[in-house]
Each structure stands twice: as C-alpha cells, then as structure tokens.
Length: 243
Length: 243
Image (cartoon, rainbow over all chains, first blue to last red; front, side):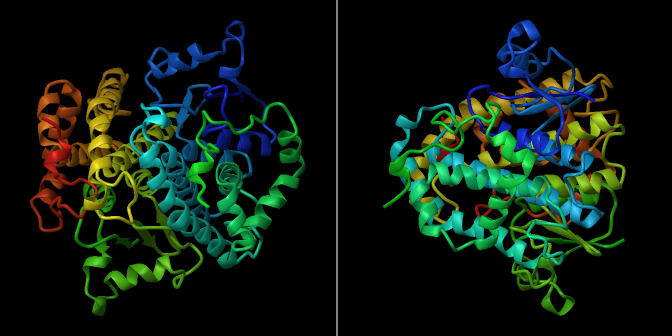
C-alpha cells in the first residue's frame, strides 16, 4: 500500500493534518508536490488531478491523498480514512462516528482561523482586507477561540475512558488535529494564547503528550516538518492578535 | 432503529441536508426541536446534548443525529453515515471515499454562502457588517460560485457510470447535498443564478431529476419542508446579489 500526498509544497496548511496522521501511524508516503518533476512530483502533478487529467475522482482543492484507485480529499475525510485503517481511530461505531464529527469540527475551526486574515476573500491579498480582518479577528479571539477550546476541554473531561484523549482509550487522528490547531494558534496568536494559558489544562496536556510520542517527536525534528509562515492558514500578523 | 434529528426549528439551514437524506431513504425520524417539550422535544432538549448533559459525545453545534448510543454531528458526517447505511451511497471503497470528499466540499461551499452575509462574525447582526458583506458577496458571485458549480459539472461529465449522478450509478447523499445547495443559491442569489442558467446543464438536470423522485417530491410538498428565510444560511438580501 502506497500513499501519495498532494499539497502546496511551501506551507504546512491543511496538508499538515494529513502528514501528522501518516507520520504518527509510521506509514511510508511521498509528499508529491515537494518532489521534483523527474520523480513524478511538483505542482503540475498536483494540478493534473485537479484538472481531471488523472481520472473522475477529481479533488476540488488540496490536500488530497492517492492510493491505488483511491483519490480522497478534504483534511477530515483523509485523516479519518487513514486513522481507521491504521490504528489511529477509536474502536466501536459510536466512538468512530464521533471522532469523524470532531475532525470536521476542527476543520471548521481552522477555516475560521484562516478567515481572520482573509474575511473578504481568499482571492485577495491580506493588505486588501486589513480593516475587515481586524474586526473578524477580534471576534475570533474573544468568542470563537474560547468556544472551540472549551469544547475540546469538555470532551477530554467527559471522556469515560479518562484517557486524556478526545475519544476512546488511545490517541486518534482527532487528537492530532487538535494538536496541530493549537500549534497553529500559538504561532498566529501568541499573545492571545498566552492569556488563555492554564484555562484548558487537558488540551495543553494532550498537546504536550503528543509532542513526546516517539514518532511525532522524530517527525517534528525532521526537515519533513514545515515551519508556519505568512503564506499559510495560520499567519503571525501581530495586529490581529490584540493587546 | 430510530433517528432523532436535532436542529434549529425555524430554518432549513444545515439541518436540511440531513432531513433530505432521511426523507430520500424513507426513514422514520423525529425532528426533535420542532416537537413540544412534552414529547421530549424543543430547543432545551437540543441544548442538553450540547451542554454535555446527555453523555460524552457532545456536539459542538447542530445539526446532530441521535440513534441509540450514537451521537453524530456535522452535516457531511451525518449524511455519509445515513447514506452508507441506507442505500444512498455508492458501492466500492474508492467511490464511497470520494462521495465523502464531495459532501465535505459542499459543506465548505455552504459555509462560504453563509459568510456572504456574515463575513465578520456570526455573533453580529447582518446590519453590523453590510459593507464587508457587499465585498465578500462580490467575490462569491464572481469567483466562488462558478468555481464550485463548475467542479460539480465536471464530476458529472467525468463520471464513468454516465449516470447523471456525481459518483457511481445511483443517487447518493452527495447529490442531495448539491440539490439543496442549488436550491439555496437560487433563493439567495436569484439574479446571479439566472445569469448562470444554462452554464451547468448537468447540475440543473440532476436537481430537476431529484425533485421528481417520488419520496423527494412528496417531502417537498409537505409541511416538514421548511421555507428559506432571512434567519438561515441562505438569505435573500438583494443588495448582495449584484446587478
């Protein structure tokens, strides 16, 4: 079984949510857009799928994952697919469905984080929407961050397995999604995250614990892990981070 | 097997994507928030789940579906769960995964439609963000609507089954999601949709065909079908519909 991940090569972005599951499960994969064209990689190879040149299962946008005749897109769908196949999902139908629900909710949270710097449109530059961004970021910091983070904290508190993971007894792709989102928020909103430090102790513990898992730790220290930057989903624009 | 749907009682919104799958599959269900409290329904019954009073599988937001010990949230996850269980999903792993990818992409499209009237924040009134809404709607009409609708058209063109459905040989929850989204766009952006009429003939044919499916036709004529209105996701604000 081979896995080819297609995503923009220069940002962690949404691709990172897939990459983390691949790495945590110890799976071999190729990060196609970061490979040279001579190895079948590059941006053009990615666009070929999106233009329908590689078959009927044409993704709307990256990231997408290709494995044999499977072409699956959308971060939460890919992560659930990999997690359920490779031991990074809870057992039992109710827990599995709830993990999928969590992952899509995390994708919503990530979209809202993105929209703090692009509230008017992804086709425009940030400089063209700074006034709107300031307003949107204010609500995101004041209302949305506590609402989402408080929800994860409540799930960790209520999990009957008392495992320290969001659902079930063991870490799953849902936990990895929260880990990456918190990392992104710490990058993009350092002051706000500092002011919230200690408010969500179980969320913080989950993130710290995942960072120490051997496969994750090795990955984070590798050059496969891309740094956050101002072309991505999570951007450090200090004017959006409040006082 | 019983299904209880929880969603805001006065708008079609995201709940409609679930309701359509329940209706198209001919499933018995209760629309809980529209039932009186004496029958276990009402808004408070919905909030009880969201406050964690009904167990650890606490949804972030409606809609959510309850069946025995299952509590599943997020439109696309619920629709896939029901579709795969009840004959409204394609056969075969690759097609099933692609249908899930489509449904989450449709949810993204719906979120963008919502954000045309709430680009700054869902916690504010439309009147507090009309200037930003005008800008966001402009990009939505000019760029995003053609991009998404063109993608569905391309999928219908490329489907090797040539069935007139998005994936596989038979109608699935992915088709129902497109149907409802087009209905919402026709309500919210009548002028823009008129100007696009004929540009996506396969999308139009799919919608017309679904509206004539006996179960769907009966549902659309019933009082279970809620009308679009200006409290929902798709709102008719003519100033956002362009010239």
